[in-house]
Length: 609
Image 1 (cartoon, rainbow, N blue to C red):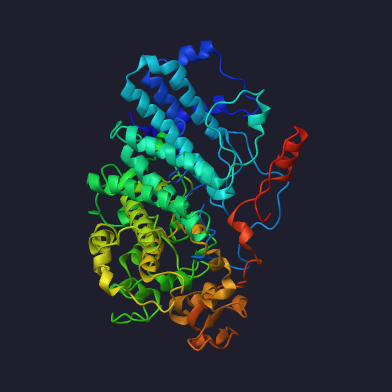
Image 2 (cartoon, rainbow, N blue to C red; image 1 turned 90 degrees about the vertical axis):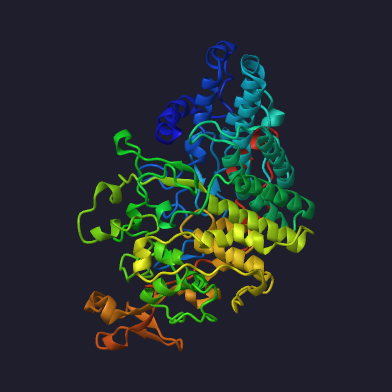
């Protein structure tokens, strides 16, 4: 049985039967427990309900929660027309849910104040301890407890990333236990120590294999590397607790080692294949994926929003463009590659790291606010339908390309960053050239597909520890090696889940203030008369603008078409409203605080709010 095509259906039944308010839900009776918790098959069925909530992939239909392209548009890589999306400016009247239905917040890239999934994991552990344990082997019992603890740790990692301090629960509570139900928030360090313990148990007890596309020790280790890197670096860069930072980062390295040393996955397929394939079965880099099948009415819309026609609304800006290395491994300022200092799309495709060509259409596209259109998640065939009727695979919400949920590249980049931060700040062993070869350079050595080769795309030269790029834009407080690791993440994960969370953990949300760099308001270098002459119309007088190399802004006035060559200026660009450090964490709602007060308890508001 494969969850990849069936888990949405299986989970639907379970979720609908469990979609009750957490505080109002009565405990299951002994009779129901005895009837349901009979064997491993029953436990597996219960565990399947976690999959669509945590292994979201491209979600389904037009739903965008936790999806690339549509869900993760709030970061410094992307710019939209008019005023940029704002951070939260005031405490909401209510923030929270007690339902198992998804409720996430895009500006925090995580869940709302909701402990339903924590409770679900605790129910699973409780039933394993009190009902199932005598019926299965000890190894099976430990495996399923590890599964429950993994999902509990997953949820708490996400909650902590959004709210910081949260109440920690490791058991099923009775409705009468008000002291526990209405406990105040626990320190994030205390919570993440519990998560750390859960993850250590997972690595020690989860099966190495539990069937194709089911959670196993290696998949769990990949996610553990993600969450421990986040919390370890958050603790470090926010100056919270050096000992905890070190502990969490060491576990990120341990989890990465487990995956890397297994030799179960490799980088022997091209980058484009990861995001535009009808089937990811057997893909050597993909550790876990979600499959889509029109026959089962399990489809998505993510490919449609990169098909060359649909408008996303937030598109790649010049700051992101300039972050891509030239294919000699140098920044554009120092590269010896011919035309490396050109920012026309045609030259960028040929001179930059191959991931640029695989992520963006190779010509100006008016559907993008910046004229650089992302198509990382659409196939090369998809964009041949521009101006025509799209097939269901690349139009509307009927897309069937498979979604990579976890891939080797993320694990090795988590691993190398954790090692670098430990070495730089916490007395860890120095990063070696061998470490770079197993991570960044292995990624750069992916094969190129025939289309990329035909365009003149070349692999990027390996990173050399003894000769790191000299970037004049590097932040003074970031060592060169760590800076380059961060750059590698940026090139690798465009449109994916990482960028906003990376800025939060590095304490770099200042990048979201677009007044700090004029390039946030710009797109690539364009020759409007040659590349997009349809923009030179009467309707676009005083709207179309370009910026020259000397900083001069030229506005189209109906008679100066020949001068409209330069960096594209995003139409009516305006910076987002001012924000402060309080937006690193979300406030809880007024109604949640009042609910506590009505019961005679106190819920502390998030710091700085």
